[in-house]
Length: 161
Length: 423
Image 1: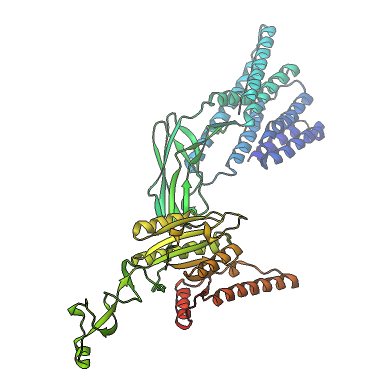
Image 2: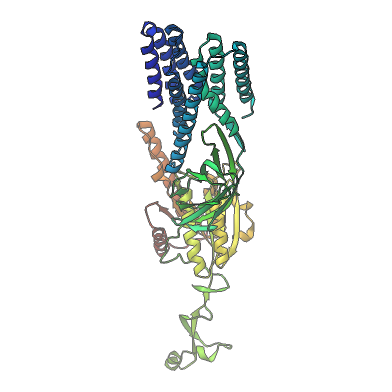
């Protein structure tokens, strides 16, 4: 299912900009190779896989022009589901006799998080469509958010395991 | 408690940051939208990183069991804040087999105790330490994992199953205490021995009136008194030949438990000498407590590698009482035990050697040289047996697939036709 989500997003990126199909497929291919390693047990490669897929989509965006892609939230959902399902399958690999209730609870939780992510992505896209009077304010806000999320990432990476 | 954070969490945070920065740099809001689910997941994952407060107790329904029986291990778990997924693994020794899924996954609701029962089949004898249970707790999305050992270790003793022996090996000489064994000596008893002339001090009730009438003088009956005997189980624990839990030591322990059980039933005194790298002994005693002592000692018996030269001199004299029947269970592989047994015979002990055969556990190699060495090995064993037999010691080979009654019967036959010798 994770591979399906990956393939779906990659296919969409290629279909969106066939002129750059080779470059997009190349980046996506590297990601697919990494996904194979992820599914073989190297979970630490998962962010790189998703980064490759995101990069392939970003290339198609840039190549396509300045028009906003209204399906970007669905692409975000596909990327997120690819990561979550791959990770879930890895965690269940050595587990035996998982009760159905636990599987169902996680499925519901992942679906809820994915739905929330979809809404957030759609919200971001909707907000961008609103004409803003002060462009500088938005730029500062965006930069602050980026810095904050990077700080969170650094803090998480420094946590003792 | 050990905590592990999935690399996915830091990865998601990094992807979110990358998406936002790339979005800003390229002026593409789609990239920001792409980052949104990952940013959300990173925040949720961070918020879920509270260590679980888990309490657990592990109990076993009994401390002793027989081989083949089932015992139940019970694990009670309480999570004060609940836990979305708890994987529990009870670490078991090889001789115990779980008859329910192990490991298993459960979900714990806040403050609601959960009782898990794990039936265990005792497949082999031994003294085991059960637990503690390894518990792994995961949050709902698998971002954080906590591992801990819960519950106290509990002990479980699995006793070997005892083979029923129809008859026992009678000793050549008995002891002075009352028992169930007919002594060779004459005295007060039930079994008729002989008639003899009356002597002053003989009681009236012992007069054989029929013999007295025929001989016209007083003749009395003589009886064999009932006495007990001392049996010393001499176990050779220098070496063990076998694999997958089956081997000469396993057979030795099973046979020793059966023999001790049967002799103690007959009110005899039974002692134990474990002669190997680790030397241990139990002085001969009678009764049920002695049976438990012997079996407990057998359970902890193991082969300890040692190159130290040992003889019977290192044993305390009381562990080998005079006139005791010494029943040696040995694979006849170590020269030290072989020499010690010959020494015992030379000291006048009533010695019986039951050879726990290692031959079924030895795979002869392929090739001419391997075949030759295998045959030489068997010949050297034959020669050792002959040395014992020359000294008047019965050596009976006992194999895994034979009942233990067989060597006893063979020893009885040997004694019937062999003359007793003094070395």
